[in-house]
Amino acid sequence: MYNYIIVDDEPLIRMGTLKKLEPLSTQIHCVGEADNGEQAVSLVEHFSVDIVILDMEMPIMDGTQLLAHLSENYPDLLLIVISGYKSFDYVKSAISANVIDYILKPFTENQIQQIVLRAIQKLDSSELMHDQIRLSEEQKELAYYEYDIQLLQNLILGYPVSDTAINSNRLSFLRHSQRLYLAAVYCSQTLEAMNLQEPLRDLGFSEMTFYLPHPKNEQIGFLILCMPDDVSFSEKSFYVKVIESLMNSIDSLHALSYWGISSPCSSVEELHEAYKKCSCALNAIAVNETTSHYYIWHPEIETEITEILWDKKDEFLFRIEAGMSSEVNRLLDELKEHQALEPRLTLADLKYYYHQLVEECLFILKQYLTNTGFSRSMSNIVNETFSAEELQQYYRQFFVNLSEMLKPQSVYAIDDTIEQVKIYAQRNYNKNLSMDFLASLFYMNSSYLSHLFRKKTGEKFAQYLNAIRIEKAKVLLASTDRKLYQITKSVGYDNTKYFFRVFKKYEGMTPEQYRLACSKQSS
View 1 (cartoon, rainbow, N blue to C red):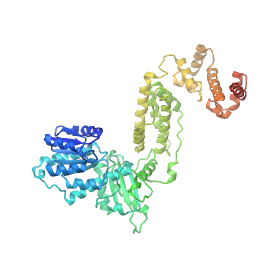
View 2 (view 1 turned 90 degrees about the vertical axis):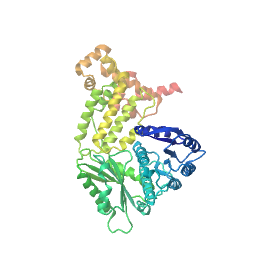
View 3 (view 1 turned 180 degrees about the vertical axis):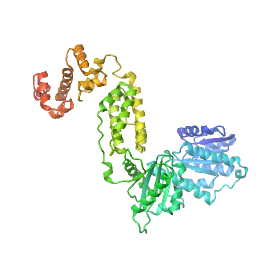
View 4 (view 1 turned 30 degrees about the vertical axis):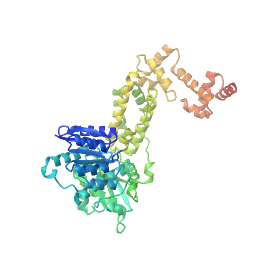
């Protein structure tokens, strides 16, 4: 077993790194943590240390000073550098020391584990234990290349970076192009094993195109296409040829792929905006699409939304609030079937509709809990979901979990059906509440429910509902300057004249007279 230490002035980063390396606990053991270079030197002096994982930005003695000290006094130590900044100065420091890798924050569990495994392999080999301290030119290029990949991934995804310079020779063509296109691909299978850079080489485009994976989602990848200034063919014919070739390559592996293509950008600094356009283009995937396809972004694509009309929405919201998860599941099956019948629907339409459902559910949730909202993580997941099936399944889990959470505290968690009907009317008075609809919610015959309601309350349901609506209207008339037709709509009436008649019947005056009387009382 080998020993290692972690040197970083951020306790959360140290804790996270330890957690990420737990699966390797049978091969390596952490003998200490330090938050600056001086503490690290003390640990190395007092313990048998084989690997040092260190940050470059630290107080007292920073990473550059620590690297120099360890390289001179402990040449057999293997060093792994992590940093939140991609700085050429840091790379030079790493090259001059016995650094086996340089990794940019934020890094994944897989990335740090693979780097440590490489260190273990190096320690296992006696030949490599005393290998040259300075990296060879080939190793330098590999280091620059790996840093550039992380940089490009960060730029595409909008992560903060301090330096956008491309340093590797392999990707030098990105420095010289002022017309870049970004294509984002979503695949029905994992992209990792498909090696999409290979067909690009076969096509002779390796000096103009570059494929890199999404750092966290194995079904998403990115293709950067550079347009030289001295080409005779059109830009569109170029990127369409490249993408169709890759699409055919993926099809041959019995997988579907969908491509979103951005408009041109002039530098790598614009890649995040380009990715937003790629995502927007991918949202044009038809819900019933069964063949690979590419979609080119254009300004109008962001406003092309087809409205989904589902007559079970109000029932669905009631089942959510009542905690009836099995019924929520059933209704989501019906919604999925309803969506499948509309051939024009796209992912954008589904995302918009589900977002509206979530907003209405969160409005319900706010009546039970505080501090609710459409979380950023949820938004990120939805934004990078480009499969109707996966999107529907994700929201199914969300809605079922929500109904389960509300079940024990729901206002409908009582046995009296008439009380449940009254609560529903009080909370949904602004909707079209027919006795047939209410009866369907509570699995009763509408005639019997009407009879039962009158028997228990002494009035017809229509009278009860009108009374609620008129009370709500009185509040709006007295406390706002909203137009009468707006108040009519907001309390559940479609016809203003009918609202006037009902209001006068209950209050003995018109809405205008009531508002005037309230105004005089307050003056």
